[in-house]
Image (cartoon, rainbow, N blue to C red):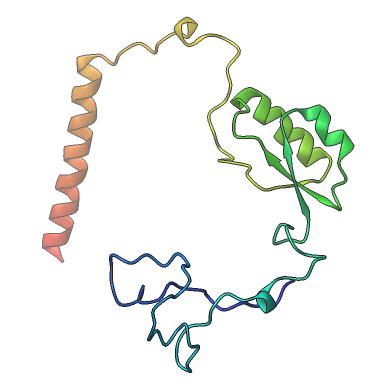
Length: 159
C-alpha cells in the first residue's frame, strides 16, 4: 500500500544499551549522523511522509472505526471500514458486537480470543458441583495405570 521508509533510529542506540531506539534529533557538533555522512542511518525529513490518500488508514487500507454498541455497525460500510471494539466494552456486549459484525462481513481489528469463556445466564453460585470420586475408584485407576506401565517394561526387556 505505501512505500517503505528507513527505520529511524536514535544516534548510538545500536552501541549503548542505555540509549533507546526512539528517535531524537542528533545535535552533536561533530555528529556524523547530523552531517548525513554515508554509512550512517537516515534522519527524519519531510520527504519520507506517506501519501495523503493512505495516511491514517489501517494496513489493510480500511478506515479504522471505534465501536461501543451493535447499533453503530449499521451506520458503517464493510467495504470501507474496519471495526475496532472499544476497550471498555464488557464481555457480554463484546460477544454481541462480534456476532453482528461477522454477520455483516466486517473485518475486526481486535476480536480477542475466539474460545473465550461462555457468558452464563446463571450466577456462579447456583451451579451444582460434581460428586467427588470415591477412594475405591481412585485406587482402581492407580492399579490400572501401574499394570499398563508394568506391561510396557516387560515388552521392552524382551526385545
